[in-house]
Amino acid sequence: MKIEPIVNGVVIDHITAGQGMRLYELLGLDKLDCSVAVIKNAMGKRGLRKDIIKIDQEIDLDLDVIGYADPGVTVNFIKDGKVAEKRTIEMPEKLVDVIKCRNPRCITGTEQELRHIFILTDRKNKVYRCMYCETQA
Amino acid sequence: MKRSLIDIVDLSTQELDELIACAKDIMANPEKYSEICHGKKLAALFFEPSTRTRMSFEAAMYELGGNVISMSSAASSSAAKGESVADTARVISCYADIIAMRHPKEGAALVAANNASVPVINAGDGGHCHPTQTLADLLTIDIQKGRFSGLTVGLCGDLKFGRTVHSLINALSRYEDVRFVLISPEELRLPDYVKTDVLEARGIAYEETADLEGAMPSLDILYMTRVQKERFFNEEDYLRLKDSYILTPAKLAGAKKDLAILHPLPRVNEISVAVDDDPRACYFKQVLCGKFMREALIIKLLKEAGTI
Image (cartoon, rainbow over all chains, first blue to last red; front, side):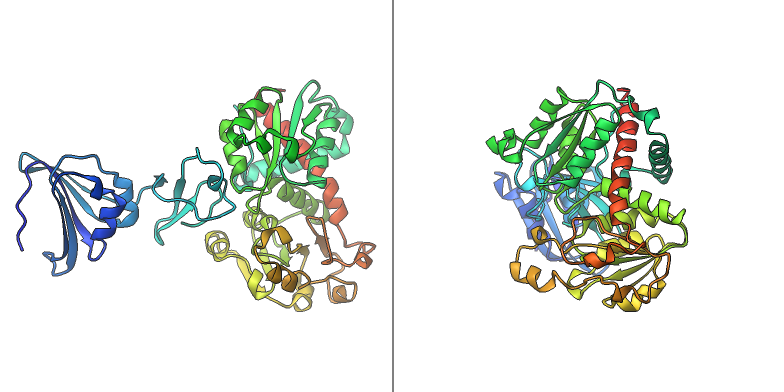
């Protein structure tokens, strides 16, 4: 299977196999007008399956969303056919308006203007807690 | 600099010790502090029913020579008209020098603190935090035992939803060689995250049991809690669990002679009134301790804000 290299855009690589479509949705890529390719179960160099997303346009991505959903993913920013910047995305210390608190008693459930902020409290176990009520995400 | 108290973890161990020392000094020398807040106002914002906490804050401010402004009830407040907590905090900051707030929503106190221009004291935000109760608990234990280190502390009842229990564990586990006995029915056990993030992370010894009488002989402190109806979504669960533990004189037969029995109050059935005359019952002293710790806290926050 072959997909043409992109000239200016973004390649999200090393996505955990099976997580590509979830990231596609979390990043809102369905709203883009440009070409977007989601490649599932591609064979990586180390013999492990992975997903890849190629976006044929320079866009601002919410890297916190990527870091929360699938830490360790690589984001390549392509300019004039070359990798201008390559970043490995780790779990962010703070998530702002990425997820919502599920605690029905949390103040964010009733006060609509509040931003939904989660703090990384346990990196090893990937635990985020609501900044207001401390409920685990 | 303005500073608020939302959670007991906002205070360092040194600050806890200083507050305890200040509260004891107020108890011993009330006249020394009787005008320290002269001309200052505390706003008591209680969006949820409260008798003792509200009156404790009011009494504390009056004893410091200050004044209190408040609303008659949540139903008559601007919140009932749909005003946000953030806006309420901004508005009340124009009237008062310090705010004590209770709100049914968890995290409401933090929202208020982030928007108020004066210090905010969390007087309870739903089932989340109630730091001034923990301050009352600490002063009571200090007065009864003269130390925190080396104590075996039994926590009994609702350890799942009991906000006072979580805060007290957090505060006491900073001291050396404290051991906890967690006494509860299976459904109301201490949440795993408190065990892992606080107890296990700090290497604190603890055991879980459903047997109050079996645990009794080892305890230096017995902290009873009420199973709170307002924390349950399902009334059947509440009715099934509400009388899980009832402390009676007979159950104290195996207890140490210098045990201290605490309870954040109000109690319903969990401590028989027959226990009230036992010299080990400290829950009414605890109420008094709460008032003095609130006085110490008001002084500290107003001093840090440069108001007094």
